[in-house]
Image (cartoon, rainbow, N blue to C red; front, side, top):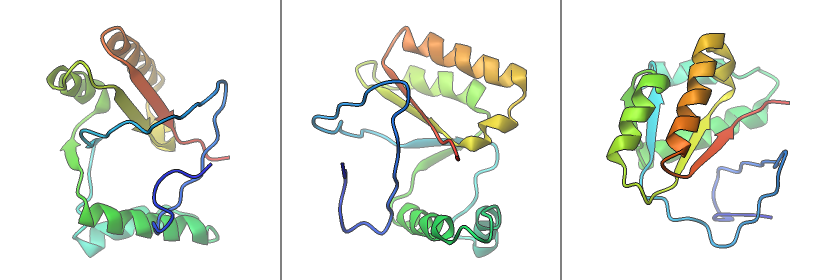
Length: 142
Protein backbone atom coordinates (compact mmCIF):
# COMPACT_ATOMS: atom_id res chain seq x y z
CA UNK A 1 0.00 0.00 0.00
CA UNK A 2 1.26 3.47 -0.81
CA UNK A 3 0.20 6.53 1.14
CA UNK A 4 1.02 10.11 0.30
CA UNK A 5 2.23 11.79 -2.84
CA UNK A 6 3.81 9.43 -5.38
CA UNK A 7 5.93 12.41 -6.49
CA UNK A 8 7.58 12.95 -3.12
CA UNK A 9 11.36 12.62 -3.05
CA UNK A 10 11.07 11.08 0.41
CA UNK A 11 9.94 7.45 0.49
CA UNK A 12 9.58 5.58 3.78
CA UNK A 13 8.57 1.95 4.11
CA UNK A 14 7.15 0.37 7.23
CA UNK A 15 5.85 -2.87 8.66
CA UNK A 16 3.13 -3.46 11.22
CA UNK A 17 4.10 -5.81 14.02
CA UNK A 18 1.96 -7.38 16.72
CA UNK A 19 -1.26 -6.05 15.33
CA UNK A 20 -3.20 -4.99 12.34
CA UNK A 21 -3.25 -1.62 10.69
CA UNK A 22 -6.38 -0.73 8.81
CA UNK A 23 -6.32 2.66 7.21
CA UNK A 24 -9.42 4.24 5.84
CA UNK A 25 -9.06 7.95 5.46
CA UNK A 26 -5.82 9.38 6.80
CA UNK A 27 -6.24 11.59 9.86
CA UNK A 28 -5.79 15.31 9.45
CA UNK A 29 -2.53 16.47 10.99
CA UNK A 30 -3.22 19.51 13.13
CA UNK A 31 0.27 20.18 14.46
CA UNK A 32 3.82 18.91 14.29
CA UNK A 33 6.04 19.35 17.32
CA UNK A 34 9.49 17.90 17.89
CA UNK A 35 11.34 17.47 21.17
CA UNK A 36 15.09 17.06 21.17
CA UNK A 37 17.83 17.49 23.74
CA UNK A 38 19.90 19.33 21.15
CA UNK A 39 17.94 20.21 17.99
CA UNK A 40 20.07 21.10 15.01
CA UNK A 41 19.65 24.17 12.86
CA UNK A 42 18.93 22.87 9.36
CA UNK A 43 20.06 26.18 7.90
CA UNK A 44 23.53 25.71 9.38
CA UNK A 45 25.51 23.50 6.99
CA UNK A 46 27.98 22.53 9.71
CA UNK A 47 25.19 21.34 12.02
CA UNK A 48 23.56 19.36 9.19
CA UNK A 49 26.78 17.37 8.80
CA UNK A 50 26.22 15.81 12.23
CA UNK A 51 23.16 13.63 11.44
CA UNK A 52 24.61 12.78 8.03
CA UNK A 53 27.81 11.57 9.71
CA UNK A 54 25.81 9.12 11.84
CA UNK A 55 24.68 7.07 8.83
CA UNK A 56 26.93 4.15 7.92
CA UNK A 57 28.88 4.93 4.70
CA UNK A 58 27.52 1.88 2.85
CA UNK A 59 23.88 2.92 3.48
CA UNK A 60 23.56 5.28 0.54
CA UNK A 61 19.74 5.05 0.43
CA UNK A 62 19.53 6.20 4.08
CA UNK A 63 21.79 9.18 3.35
CA UNK A 64 19.59 10.16 0.40
CA UNK A 65 16.42 9.69 2.47
CA UNK A 66 17.87 11.91 5.22
CA UNK A 67 18.89 14.59 2.71
CA UNK A 68 15.37 14.55 1.27
CA UNK A 69 13.85 14.82 4.75
CA UNK A 70 16.13 17.77 5.57
CA UNK A 71 15.02 19.60 2.41
CA UNK A 72 11.36 18.96 3.22
CA UNK A 73 11.83 20.22 6.79
CA UNK A 74 13.59 23.33 5.56
CA UNK A 75 10.55 24.08 3.39
CA UNK A 76 8.01 23.01 6.05
CA UNK A 77 9.55 23.73 9.45
CA UNK A 78 8.42 21.85 12.54
CA UNK A 79 8.08 23.49 15.93
CA UNK A 80 11.15 22.11 17.72
CA UNK A 81 11.41 22.27 21.48
CA UNK A 82 14.72 21.83 23.21
CA UNK A 83 14.24 19.51 26.14
CA UNK A 84 13.80 16.05 27.54
CA UNK A 85 10.77 14.11 26.25
CA UNK A 86 9.90 12.79 29.70
CA UNK A 87 9.37 16.29 31.05
CA UNK A 88 8.35 18.18 27.89
CA UNK A 89 5.75 15.78 26.43
CA UNK A 90 3.32 15.83 29.39
CA UNK A 91 3.38 19.65 29.39
CA UNK A 92 2.80 19.78 25.63
CA UNK A 93 -0.15 17.41 25.73
CA UNK A 94 -1.88 19.53 28.36
CA UNK A 95 -1.94 22.42 25.85
CA UNK A 96 -3.32 20.37 22.95
CA UNK A 97 -7.08 19.97 22.46
CA UNK A 98 -8.26 16.72 24.08
CA UNK A 99 -10.15 15.61 20.95
CA UNK A 100 -6.92 15.30 18.97
CA UNK A 101 -5.11 11.98 18.83
CA UNK A 102 -1.49 12.15 19.82
CA UNK A 103 1.09 10.43 17.65
CA UNK A 104 4.43 9.93 19.39
CA UNK A 105 7.33 8.94 17.15
CA UNK A 106 10.77 8.23 18.46
CA UNK A 107 13.85 6.93 16.76
CA UNK A 108 16.14 4.07 17.54
CA UNK A 109 18.09 6.45 19.80
CA UNK A 110 15.55 5.49 22.48
CA UNK A 111 18.05 2.77 23.37
CA UNK A 112 20.35 5.52 24.65
CA UNK A 113 17.86 6.35 27.42
CA UNK A 114 18.76 4.91 30.79
CA UNK A 115 16.59 2.01 31.95
CA UNK A 116 14.92 4.37 34.41
CA UNK A 117 14.24 6.97 31.71
CA UNK A 118 12.73 4.30 29.41
CA UNK A 119 10.47 3.07 32.21
CA UNK A 120 9.46 6.66 32.96
CA UNK A 121 8.67 7.22 29.27
CA UNK A 122 6.48 4.10 29.15
CA UNK A 123 4.59 5.15 32.29
CA UNK A 124 4.19 8.69 31.01
CA UNK A 125 2.67 7.49 27.71
CA UNK A 126 0.33 5.14 29.59
CA UNK A 127 -0.75 8.01 31.81
CA UNK A 128 -1.41 10.29 28.82
CA UNK A 129 -3.37 7.50 27.11
CA UNK A 130 -5.85 7.51 29.99
CA UNK A 131 -6.95 10.97 28.82
CA UNK A 132 -6.61 10.74 25.03
CA UNK A 133 -5.74 8.40 22.17
CA UNK A 134 -2.00 7.89 21.80
CA UNK A 135 -0.40 6.33 18.74
CA UNK A 136 3.20 5.29 19.27
CA UNK A 137 5.60 4.72 16.41
CA UNK A 138 9.17 3.75 16.91
CA UNK A 139 11.91 3.14 14.43
CA UNK A 140 13.43 -0.29 14.54
CA UNK A 141 16.49 -0.86 12.42
CA UNK A 142 16.74 -4.49 11.37
